[in-house]
Image (tube, rainbow, N blue to C red):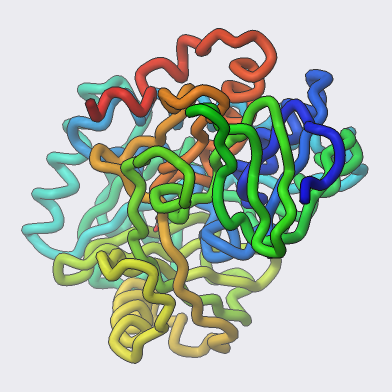
Length: 373
Ligand code: GLY
């Protein structure tokens, strides 16, 4: 059974990435249906919302860094457009990101990182421990060194997702609340999305935006996306504790603290290769709380309101797969790994452009899935 006439585009996945693609495609005149049993219930729900091209940048990931910077540059306009479409303004937190270290090893690691940033022409500032504490007085006095990245911001994904959903629906996007069971194919071409209840959404093109689930969908070609588990905590009572995001290495483990709203704080995140395991473990919560309290002792006073585990969509080179899949009728918008919230505006724009024009935009070309052979 199919659900009505074919649409131009069916988007499998109603997280931030899928909705951004759907919204921008609908704005460009395409008929669009999104399929998701729980839109925004995956990585978009867990994400801390760091918009941090520089402090997330890894060695050898310059192409990804440039993509992330381009998307960060789109954020103000993206939020303006959403405000016009919905009457709701989602705020960017303007305070920047502070990366701090405690001992000689950290100081060396931060000096190397700073050198790498300078080599790439990025705007970063080295700080002494005292200067770091002047920026964020709740940091432990044990902080010896820091790097401030003024341009690395944050947004609250839980505020963003419903606004993006409202904008998409206002632009004519239909949302089918069903689990995506498979892709439908006919003679090698993807023709639609099979729903778990037995229905089908037929479409001229399907966009695969299922996050970590994009790698194992029946009917889809092999897409090199795997789940990378992250456990994350939410706390309350943090009004005035931090101005912006703080990141640190604590005994080799990375931790970040992202203030949200008036008194929220998100502490993340573990990085675990455990398939689709959603268990929140005592060890995971312990490590995150321990490390957060090492960096900002005042965390000990906060109320722990939520623990959650979800999966980042990881790829072999940590960069997304954007554009043609190699299978007719199927376009990819997946594999955003640690940068899904950040890459939301640009992914929507680039994939919508591809859907409308049939041409792969230059910014998307380096992220063609065929780079993996
Ligand atoms: N972007 C932060 C994380 O993936 O944990």
